[in-house]
Amino acid sequence: MLECSCDKLPKRLLTKRLLAQTIHWTILQTGCCWNVTCSVNQYSVPICSYCKSVLSSIELKHDLRRKLFGQHIAAQVILKAVTGFMESENPKKPLVLSLHGWTGTGKNFVSQLIVENIYRKKMRSNFVHLFTATAHFPHEAHINKYKTQLQEWIRGNVSICPHSMFIFDEMDKMHLGLIDILRPYLDFYEHLDGVSYRKAIFIFLSNIGSEKINEVALDFWRDGREREEIKLKDIETALSISIFNNKNSGFWHTSLIDNNLVDFFVPFLPLEYKHVIQCGLAEMARKGYLFPNKKVVVKMARDLNYFPKEGKCVFSMQGCKVISNRLGFYI
Image 1 (cartoon, rainbow, N blue to C red):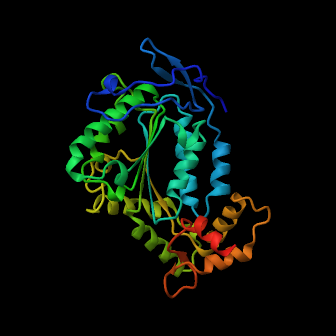
Image 2: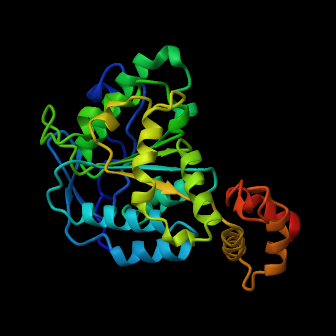
Image 3: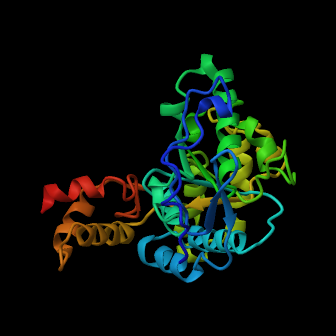
């Protein structure tokens, strides 16, 4: 992996006055990414430029295969979409991924894996911008202010680093209409007011559509078919329609879907009992146990809740989300 030489750059970048007088956020110290080199323009602002062949598809593939359990569709789509986009010298539009599934199935985890394979400082990089609906956009009455702030934040950061990444979590709790202000930045425009957004990445995370995904997984299970037989085409169209028509989410009748600006709707299947065991063993290894105790993990896994009722420990209702904190109780 290549690294850029940003250590000599100023410790602070643009403040709100150079971006927009109304913005109350400040762009702080830069965190260089593996796929950029940086220089300073006449305004002492770091400008990032693309370096070829720096994202190793082998490393990303290895991480998805070794660390992500039970998500063959997501692993395949993410690998091809991200590597194809990063290896393109001149993408026609930003990469837009929408990850959907029940809690604990790996949506946040996958977004972190993508970040870790692109940015040297990983999630601490200032080129990675994580928004959660309840923390950053809590009050519906302030939606117009949020729209202005979000527009200026994206414009300012992409101006500094074209390879910026924006992650929006809790899309199911996002206020209606807010996300539509992103439409111009996700489209095929070469430039908007002198800024190109074509090398940026936008990732949306949501529980919306999980019922449709679970329904498909259940149908395959009841038919005696392996989950690995489920293909993206079996879910994606119905999933996108379900998301578009869900009145309780920020995607309801959004122009992002209506104008086909989301490149992939990525389904995360409900995890099975065997995947919970894998998560538990991996978590014990992460905690420093050289020889993870499978008996401990099995005991913990059996105490979790599963569905459907007629099955015995088929699909986990909590996924892997509670494993880290629960393990200590059984050790």
